[in-house]
Length: 156
Image 1 (cartoon, rainbow, N blue to C red):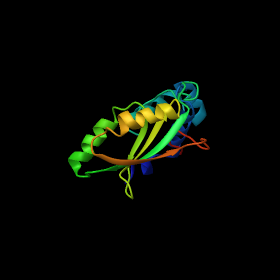
Image 2: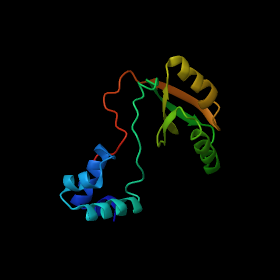
Image 3: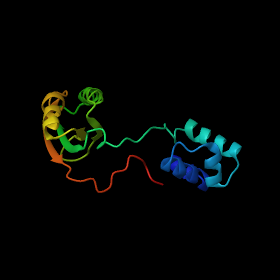
Image 4: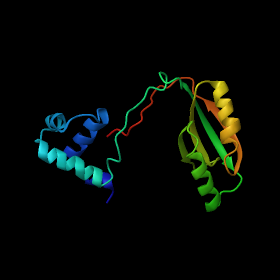
């Protein structure tokens, strides 16, 4: 049975409310879902222990941090054996400008989301960081002109 199949309507309400505002107090959360504090606190703890809730964090505005530039990069590797993939995965995690990295089944091996100050800064990241990652054969860049929908959370 899939983990999401075991979420009852109350759990889903809790998750939805915390997705909107993870700083809700247990009192406010209990009002939102229609249960008293103790069962809501127990449910939140259970969701954390089951790994459904994996953490809490602040969502930052990249524009206000001076990082408005987004590029998506297709990366092809010279070697796709397990050892090479692990080496690439480990190295890509150390590049702070790489916001997301996905292994892809298709015409290339990885898709990266890279955030930078501007095109010149992106060029530096590409030349000094991405191109130097282990086993990189080639890359193709797509520059995002506008974020139409950008969510940093899963919706229920």
